[in-house]
Image 1 (spheres, helix red, strand yellow):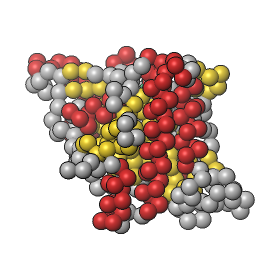
Image 2: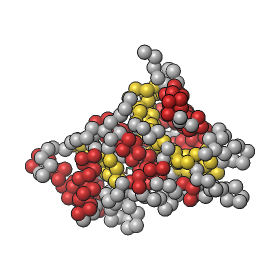
Image 3: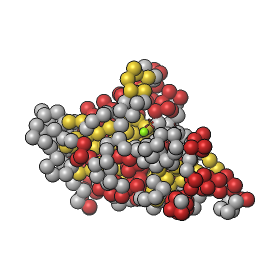
Image 4: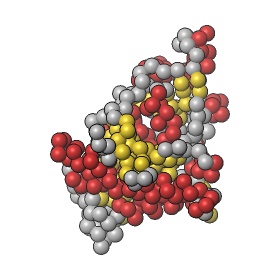
Length: 337
Ligand code: AHM
Ligand code: MG
C-alpha cells in the first residue's frame, strides 16, 4: 500500500469532510515550518544555534537563540500565504499583524514556537505547539490592526491543534476535531508520513508526570492525590506508579498519548494570582484538544480547560491532563476542597 503523506491526508480530508482548502494550506505551511525548525534543532552546536540571547520574552524568561529562530521561521512561513488574519506566540508580547502587502485570511494561528526551552541546550526532546482559531468578524480596527480580543476564544473553538516533537524522530501530531493522527518525518522523502492512525490515550495507567520539586508549594487536593500515587500498592489506589518528568510538555504529552498517564502542572503558592506555569492559549488549549480527541481528559483542577474563557493572550492555567480515570480522580479531589 502506498504511504499516506500529510498532504494526501489533508487533500482527502478536504474532499470527504469539506475541510476548507485554506485550513489545509495552513496546516501544510505549519508543517513545513516545523521541518525547518527540526532541521535547525538537529544541527545543534554545529549550526551555532545553542545558547541564550540577551533578551527576555513577555513572561520575563531569557530567550534561547532557538526560541527566537523558531518564532521567525513560523512567522515568515505563515505571513504571506493569505490564510491568516493574525498570529500570536509565546515569544511575542502582542498579536502579530500580517504585513499590509499580503492578503488576510480567515484564521488565527497561536503557537509556542519551541516548547521545553530548558531542554534545548542539553539535547533532550523539544517541540512546537500550535492552535488554530477562526478570526471573528469585525476584528480589525479602523487602522487595520488586529487586537488581542480576536484571539480570546475558549479552546472549544479551536478548528485544529497540533504539535511537532523534535526527538529521536520528528513527528507531527494533529487533530482537526475528529480524532488524532500522528505523522513521522521521513527525512529522505522530506515529507510527514502517516504512521499513527487514530491515537488513543490508554484509560488506566500507572504513570504520572509532575515536577516534584515544587511539592511544598502545592494546594491540599494536589498533595492528597500525589501522596496516594506515591503510596502505591499500600495506598488507596492499590497499585504502584512510576514517575516521569521530561520537562518538555510536548515530550511528556507524547508519552502519555502513547502509553497513558497523567501530566500535572498545578496551581501553586509561589506566585499568587498566577495559576500554574503553563499558558492557556498556546500550551494548555491545543494539548487539551488533542488529549480529549484521543479519549482522555483535561482540566485545571476544577473545570474543563477547553471551556475556560481566556482573558489575556499569555494567561496561565493549572493543567491536569491524560488518562481519564486519573484526571477525574484529581479533579474530584479539587471539588471536595
Ligand atoms: P517553556 O515554554 O518556556 O519551555 O516552558 C514550558 C515548559 C513545559 O514544556 C514543561 O512542562 C515545563 O515548562 C517544565 O517546567 P519545569 O521547569 O518546572 O520542570
Ligand atoms: Mg512552552
